Image (cartoon, rainbow, N blue to C red; front, side, top):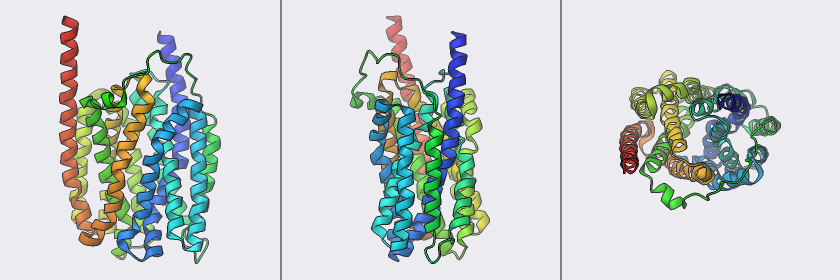
Length: 407
């Protein structure tokens, strides 16, 4: 048994590194959208309230593709599914460049929707990393796969700064061409993934999705993921617009996004260890506490340093809270229910985040950066309530199982 576990963990480690490399390349996709779509949207429409619509369509692309992505991978395998997902990234980059050249806001939204579809596959890298790992090694495999985003913090943002004015007067057009090239490289990297097919089909179909979601532990974990992703998206989306509106250059806004992405993924190398040692409850609470500090820093000033520190803390808080939520989801999922639960989780998380993406522009237009920063406080407290609700539900399940065993 120990030999089988070691072999499984070696394969899981190999796959996690492949997925980390693919995540680094895919980070160019998300980074480009985050750093440029609000600015492009503002330029194409002239309206602040409409500027974040491309981010909304990005999130909608992710949310609407989660179920097809999950079931395509169950039908064709993780490797083929992920490689196919990279094709959406190629299409997104090419359409995005075309939209900027033609000055078409609708076409640009279509490009970010396709980029979101690509992201729907990317966000499932963390689940794929756990497929061949033992339960004890699973949090570390997930964290390692997410750690690929550390490189994306530099790859994506440097890509924007290097290419933004290479095709003037079409600002950022060359950036989207480069993003398509990175997605093409990711396509070939993902072909090296080695996830063995199931030897036999599960004997049980699993519970209906409604019954699964009735589990208080799962519901609280999914909502925690939605809250942490939502508050992160709310602030992150409006940052480039807010910084440029404060008279800061685009390069400074891109640097702030770089620090944010670094904060999102750099802790991933230790978050799995922290969850294994201290538990989901404590790590999740720490993430919510960091959200509060982020809000306080963002409220205190509008210098480049204030933006960079706040965005970095936002990323770290997201990492702790979101990874805790992900680990909680995997812990209460049966093998035969894995595909639909993972898809339902991402649908809830990114469906809710779509509202944050839209209202980011509205809040920024009405209340300014101060109003955006203030949203971190209720979100953090809601996250704390969900963590305590999940803990209580877990205790009820343990108590019920103990009574059944005793009977």
